[in-house]
Length: 140
Ligand code: CMP
Image (cartoon, rainbow, N blue to C red; front, side, top):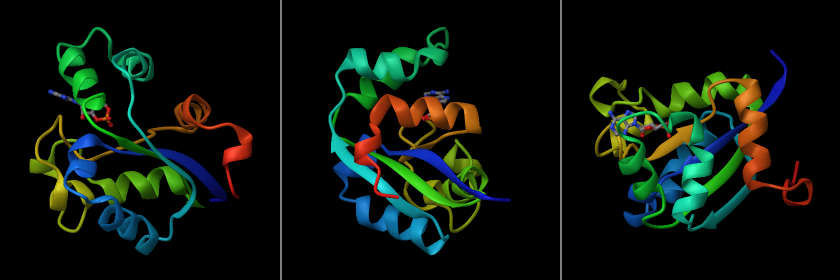
């Protein structure tokens, strides 16, 4: 597997509890390099645009209001097999099902307030990276 990039978000529940560094340490320990990173607060419209694929889900309102409720940290992570590796480090969406040592097992509060987002495939990674970052903002 070649070097790959994936998109990651540290969510409002984690930034509120000052967990950015602890979560970044997990990424780095797993061999993922943070090649771009910025802390921003999304508007509700921006959160709705980012999660548009979920617009028909019953939790869409809750999800987008939560994502706009406090700052997030948007990131690009790079490494060998980065998409799969990041999903492994994050753990299952529902923290009750996440494995020991994963970010969600250690830090997530609930299925909604689950501390991190990570792209699920190369196509979504490309779209999500472009949503948040221009070429000039990626260090390599
Ligand atoms: P994420 O990887 O950011 O992608 C979509 C998000 O929807 C997911 O993480 C969860 O945080 C959220 N989500 C999924 N299922 C539920 C649910 N049943 N209730 C609230 N939020 C959910």
